[in-house]
Every structure is written in C-alpha cells, then in structure tokens.
Image (cartoon, rainbow, N blue to C red):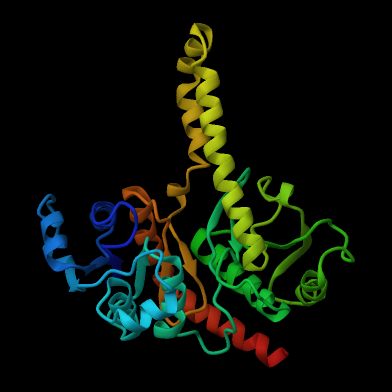
Length: 336
C-alpha cells in the first residue's frame, strides 16, 4: 500500500478539490491509501459528501494553515501544527510515502528540504513539472527551486530528470538538453558554458546539446535542463500561451454563424488537441532528490490534477525512483 498524504487545506479550491481528487484516485487504484492533513472537522464535513473505502482513508489533524503570503522559513518554524508541516513530518517519519499540496510554494520547498531532507549526495532538489510538447511531454527541470544554481547542480538535475522520465513516464533513454540562446556550444551565459561540457561528458544521460526556447514545444528534448529563474519564466509563459490560445480560438470560432457550424464539426478533435495544453492533465511537479516524495500542485488545482498527482505518487513509489536517484548521484560523486 502506498500512503499518500494530501494537504486538504492548501490551494484556492481547498478543501473540495484536494479531497475530491484524492478520493477519485483512491477509487481507481486499490494500492493507494490517502491521509488527509488539515482541520479534522472541515475534512470530515467534506468527506460526508462521498462514498469511499473508509479503511483506506485517514485524517491527520492540523489546526493551522500556512497562507501563500507568509515568509516560508518563518512559517515552517512557527506553524508546527499546520497541514504542510505535519504532512511533511509524516513523510519524514516513514508513515507516508508522498506529500501533495496546492498550498504555499515557498513553504513546500523550504519544508521539503528542512523536514524531509535531501538524499545523501544531492546538492539541490529541483522542481520538475511535465510540460506539453508536440511529441507528448517533457520534464522542465528546474522550474522554481534553485535560482542560484551551479553547474554541478544542473548535472544532477539532468540525471534526476532522466530517471523520472524513463521510469515514471516510460521514455527509454530520454534526450537531455540545456536551455540556451543558440545551439552552438560557445553560446550562453557563464553557467551554461560551464555546464555544457560536464553534461556532454556525463556517461549515463543521453545529452543532445543546447535547446532554444522555440524548440521546447516541438519536443526536441525529453529533459529540459535550466536553473530555476529561466525554468519558471518558461513554465509561466507556457501556461499563458495555453490560456491565450484557448481564448483566441474560442473567440474566433464563435464570431459568426459559419464559424460556429465549423466549430461543431471539429469540436471533438479540437477538444483533444487543446487538452494537451491543460495543466491539470499532468498532475503536480515533484521536488526530486528528497528522502520522500514531495509534490507541488498548482494553487488553482482542481479535482483532476490532484487525482493524477496521487496516482503519479503511487507509480513513483513502485518504480523506486528515490533509490535510483541515490544510486546514480553517488556514482556521479565517485566519478567526480
């Protein structure tokens, strides 16, 4: 049984979305047990709306909530009874295999490192969301955890991203590229120039060189490596383009009678295409390299995104991702 702790108090749509999503995953996968962290009376009130296997649901009472605007380090230290802190401690103590939250990004990142702790040898844990491409998905690593990353960190990101894409997403020998302003090795800032030869000489990743931003959605790489500032800009731009494209298409298709008729004819195909740009289709972003799995879902996450994130946690655990990361990182350190 995979024990997944879900922060019932985090995000814009709490407690409804976290609870509905987790119960949806519970119904689909009988190897999952869900522990809801949060205010017990609120959680019980929401659970009363559903029929579910009560033997596979537990409540971890937490009377405090860390708000998005609070300073992360201070909040983690002061709010010991918050759903985030108690949920992360549950994972640290081995009672939970994973923790999912749509709450404060800063608190989750800080708490993941301070409470759950890093795998031995991991210098910095990166956030690794999946982003849509023409060929399926790519792992964007890092997208928000380490804005002051060094070359050695990016090499570890590449290794962890490769493991994630191979064993969780199922892409054999995933192609790894570093984000750059051109394909030539001599281009880029100091960090990229220092990292490029290290990645090229890394024996256990399939490094294909630099990737420009325009090539990312074309699916030219399966693992897109960058430091967090660049990664976060790419991620937010991606999300903005997806929303804008959807709105522009809708406006165009509803502009007159002829386009409305055309819209009806292509409705099913268009729906499938636009689905690729829906963030909820890809679950949350795992914070890789910790002693337990910590997943950050969007603050606006709804039922579907939480459900997929919970199922991803089960797959992550079944594939022994942490053990594989530990093994590869230690090999890298020995080589270094």
